[in-house]
Every structure is written in C-alpha cells, then in structure tokens.
Length: 473
Image (cartoon, rainbow, N blue to C red; front, side):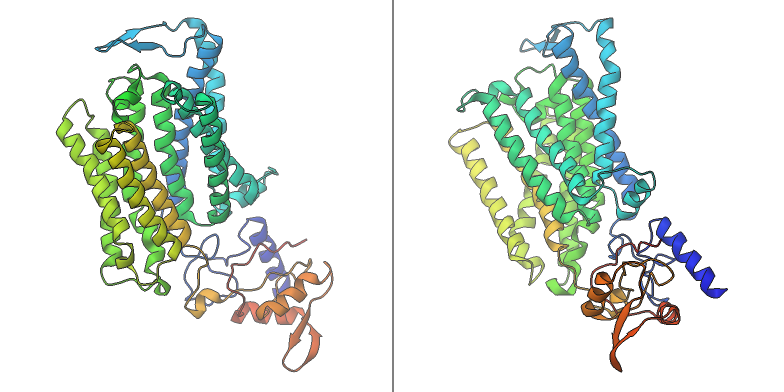
C-alpha cells in the first residue's frame, strides 16, 4: 500500500508540471531545510515576476494594436500615412477618420493579442510552459520561444525606420536597406540572446521592460502630429498632449519604474562568492540602477515642452548614473567576467563618441544621441543579467541534492544515482526495463523499488544542473 500511494503521488507531480520539485517547492530528495527553488533550481530572483511580465505584455499588446490600426487604416482606408500634420506651430487635421475606418479595429486588436500571447509564451517560466503543454499546444520549445522574441525585436527595428523614413534618405539604398539591415541584426541578435538566457527569470522580465519602451515609442511615432520630430529630439514625441504623447510618456514612466523595481534582481548574481564583490559594492550598483529608473520616470512625467530645465536634469541624471555604473565595473567586484568589463568600457566609449559627434562636430542631432543613450542603458543591463547569471556554481551541498532523472516507465521512474556515469546508464537503458546501477560493492546490480523509496527518503547526490521532468507512463 505505501508503494502504491508513492507511485500515485509521483504521477500527480509529473502531470502538474512540477516533476523537478518536491511537494513544497524543494527538489525531490532534498532535505527539509533545503531552500525553496523554482524552474531551473535557482532561487526565485523576483517575487511577483510572473504578474509583472503579464502586465508588461498587456501594455505591449495595446501599443502593438495602436500601430496595427494606424498601418491598416493607412494602407486600406484612404492611403493616409498620418492622421495629422504639423505646420510648425500646431497640429492640423490632415485626414479625418471615418466610420469605415473602425472596421479595422478588430484586426488591429487581434494583432495586438497575437503579439501579447507570443511574448507571454516567450517569457514564460518552466511552470508556465508545463501548464500550456497540458492543453496540447505545440511549438513551445526553447527555439520557438527565442524566435518569437527575435521576430518581435526585428519588427520593432523595421517599423522604427518605416516611421522615420525621411531621416534615412542619405544612406545607400534608402530607408528600405536600413530597415532590412537593422531588423536582421537586431532580430538575430535577440534570438541568440534569448535562447542563451531564457532560463533566467530576471532576464525574461527585463527584456519586456525594454520592449515596452520600444513598442510604446513606435505607437507614438505612428500617430504623432509633430511631423518630423526626429529633427528636434526624441522627447518631442511626448509633447503633443494627445494619445501619441501618452503612448511615449506612459511607456518611459512604466519602463523606468520597472527598472527601479528590478534593481535587486538585476544585480543578485554579482553578490555570489565567485565574483568577489567588495563591501558596499552591490548596494552602490542597486542605488545607481534605481537612480537611472527614477530619472527615466522624470523624463516621462515632465515633458520637454513644460519644465525644460527639470526634464534635462532628469535626462542628465540617467546618463551620469549609467556612466558611473560602467566606469566602476571593476570596483564593484574583483572577478567579474571579462566580457562584461569589455561591454562596460565599450558602452562608455560609444556614448562619448556619440556626444562628440552630436555636440562637437554636428554629425547628427540630439535625437540620434538620445536613442544611442537609451539603447546602451537597456543593452548593458540585459548583458549584466545574461553574463553574470551564466554557469551558476552552487556553493552549498543542499543546492546540489536532487534525484537524477531516468527515462523509464513504471514504478521505477525515479532513482537516486550518483554522478554522470549512473545518469548516462539510466538514459541509455530502454524504457520499461529496470535500471542497472553501479555500486562500490560490485560490478552492477539492479535498483529495486526498495532502493527508490530509500533514496527518496534520504535524498541523493546528483549533478549540478536541475533535473528535468521524469516521464511516467
């Protein structure tokens, strides 16, 4: 009877998508005092991250619906690219929206829902993906999720060039060549990054924080009445006192708030002993990230056509905080990865070159400089998470205790094994058979159901990576 109850309990755990955890959030076989873990076996890095991702995905979907509606009505309902024009002093209606334009509302909303759903899947945790699999949904592997993320970022680049096409007429091939180039580079780059860092909850969440600012800006670009806003500055998008300005200002305020809220989770891995963080360094990094986020909120809350001085102070504060964060990269910890150090100093060099090109020799205007600065901030923080969270090295024995998964069916589906040799043997054994296991006493023996129960009670030593779900027939 006890064995039957344990078999039923194991089946319930696997069907619920929690085969890598015990009944209370601990790895199977881990002692009672082991820390609660989620997804990959790492400590939860951000309480409420799932709710935060759903909120950001909803806002991104709304902005995408606005962009889709503008493009649909522009192409199929009169051929107008914008609903307003700017005569240098005020917004003048160019083409009035008619009742027949509203027919494109449903397709636009459908496009927004599709974008939001794709992003939810791309940024979902292991538990969320396991829950979706229970509904028989296909294509939810690592590559499919990374492709959804890469295609979204690639579309962001293409649309950004599309809405500012006149700014790229000086380039060979015009704005079409620039759109294809930027879209391909950003799409492929974010695909590879997402595929590499998809297991890190802080990365998946912050990726949506950055995407909200980008897609919110796109929505503002698509309907802004400010005309050639890029000839002035990026903040001009927030000065029209209409829905276009709201899209830009809300996006930058919410993104800044999200960055400030994630300051702890973005730097949590730096505090691990392997990096040799100096005293007070982690606190200093978090304070600087919070300052960047708060300054971004100030940029959105105080448009440049209002209190211009306060707006500029907020923008300068964000740039200064980011510069200190990058310049002090080797002061925060003794053994930070070389790639992060190089990325930090390269970010400072790029920002200085952009400043000289804008303010010194006038190669390009303030808009380009602001876009470069925004991109560097979010790219560096994403790199911080992806690089420092890579190759985790547990330092306590409790975090390494788990049962090695075995690809067999029946009552012997979970077996405590030690080291990669036993795990390899279990994987090569045909399903339905019994599991050969090497022990110090003899060449080989067969693990019985009694061994399984005893291993589950006392916990087993396994490999460093988290166990996968154990298929039980």
